Structures are given as C-alpha cells and as structure tokens.
Image (cartoon, rainbow, N blue to C red; front, top):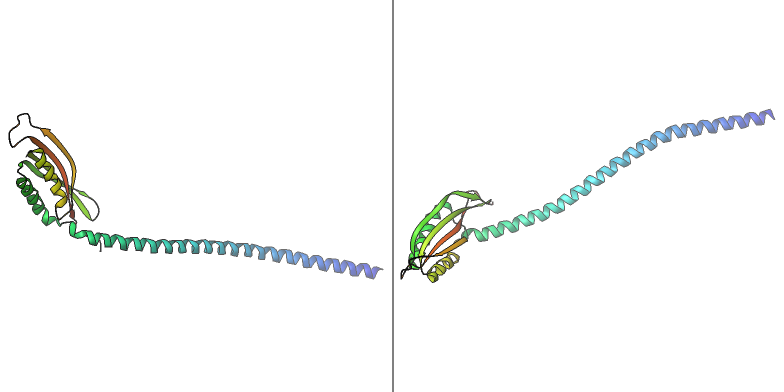
Length: 183
C-alpha cells in the first residue's frame, strides 16, 4: 500500500511539475503570441492605409491630368502680362467704335493672385447713349481673351445732350498668366 501511495504521490508531483512548467512556458509564449498578434494588426492597418493612399493617389493623379488638360485648352484665352496694353487699347477702341466718350480709363497697380493666373482690375468711365454702353459691355464677351465685368453703375446725366445721355462706371477684370504655370 505504501508503494501505491508513493507511486500516486510521485505521479501527482510529476503532473504538477509538468503543469507548472507548461503554465510558466505557455504564459511567456502567450505573451509573445499577443505581442506578435499586435504587430500583425499594426502591419495590417498600415497596409490598409497604404492601399487607401495608393487608390487616392491614382484618383488625384487622374484629377491633376484632367486639370492640366483643361488649363492647356484654356491657356490661349489667358494672355501674358506683355499683352495687357493690347487689352486696354482694344477696350479704348471698342468705346470709340460705339461712339462713347472715354472719360476715365485705368488699371489697378495691384493684382490678385489666383494661382496660375492673376487678376488685374480695370476701371472705365464712358459717356454716351444707353444702347451704346450696353453694346460696349457686350463687347467684353467678344474679346479673344478672358475679360470679366464685375460691376456697372449707370448714372443719367443731368444735362442731357444729344450724344451724352448716360455716364457708365464699369469695373472689369483681365486675367493674365503668371510666368510659372502648370507643367
């Protein structure tokens, strides 16, 4: 009987040692496994972020190509700064062609930076018939370059003369290409 009890105690001790060894070993392995799983999860998240960036990159590159194509198709409408006197001369000639008296004509010394183009403000004051002023303003849309009418103020002259009945204050913009442009 003692022998059986000794064998049972020996088996119990052996199993306890094995369980203890496995618990110690497995706990460290579980810790390493958790650490590896965390690393794998981080790598997956980075991979997902990279895939998303790659997808967005392709879309952004396509949008940039479309923007460049649009800019290149519109660039003939945007004059260089050297052409500004030509624009101003054209406007003065249109006023004369319409029978308007050009009272005041100037360009702003400051330009508004709009990225690849800049905007130059132009102020014009003319006297003449309302119909002639209307046609003069329509001429802005017929110019070979981009011109924009920002505002028009019409004032009826107190002393109406046969050829001078309306005074028009026109604020317009010309758009000029900057030296550097989309490549």
